[in-house]
Amino acid sequence: MRHSKLLYYFSEVAKAGTLSAAAKTIGITQPAVTRSLKQLEDLLGVTLFDRLPTGVVLTAEGQILARRVKLMTLEYKHALAELADQNKGVSGRLRIAAGPVWLLSILPPVINEFHKQFPDVRVSVTGPGFDAGIQQLLDGDLDMVCGGLDFPDHADIVKEPLLKLRHTVFGRAGHPLASKKKVSAEELSKYPWIVLADDRASGSTIGAYFAANSLEPPNVAVETSYLGAITIARSTDYLSTFAENSRSEIEAFGLTQISHEGTFWDFEGGIARRRSSPPGPAFQGFRAILKSAVSE
Image (cartoon, rainbow, N blue to C red; front, side):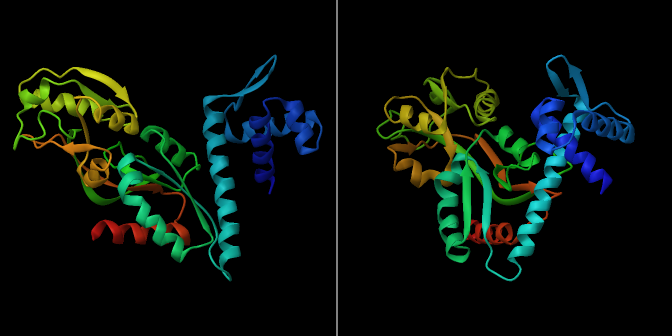
């Protein structure tokens, strides 16, 4: 109990930024807060805050503890929610970050089926950059990330492979290369390219493809979002790469797949979750529906 109180005081100081504001929120005196922080720092053997004239800021050690305390608080809330759900239908929120191919073609039917089985669970789906999504997962702000799994391993992240994804070349319907049976790398290199700003591998994989064919990287004319790339490509002769799994959805926007020599990028896709947060009923249900959908 003593440790939990110290951690609570620490968390409030971290949020408030000043000892006086934290003391007011907690309902105790400022000296009492100061003593509690000193006890916690002595207990842990580290300095948690740098004291400044305007308040306090977390040290590197304090930032680590603050993140872990936040996760502990979230886990406690999740435990309460699970206990409350034991004798009634599952409710709450499932927080997911997903890459463009998932948002465009994979997740819509999965979410539809999920809501039939879990009508009281709200699904929150966002599309942040991949690195941001993984950090939000580690911070406890997400339950699941759907995307490529070719990122460095982390002790608190479990990767669950579900399918193979392949990026290939798309251009506008009526593009000069669209009618050819097979386009060479040299022909592709003559056109301006669009890279995806929210895809960490987009630019590097394009460069690697041309290097493998003993060619200089093409002119990268635009760096933009997934939707921006589709919008620009369908009204110009610029080229870009998208996941072949979303071909029908992308072609509905006025683009067409351009058959070419070699492979741009094959990678494993799936879900990532925190190891320290055991999957609840909603997570397990969503994962089961997702696995069934991608295996069909």
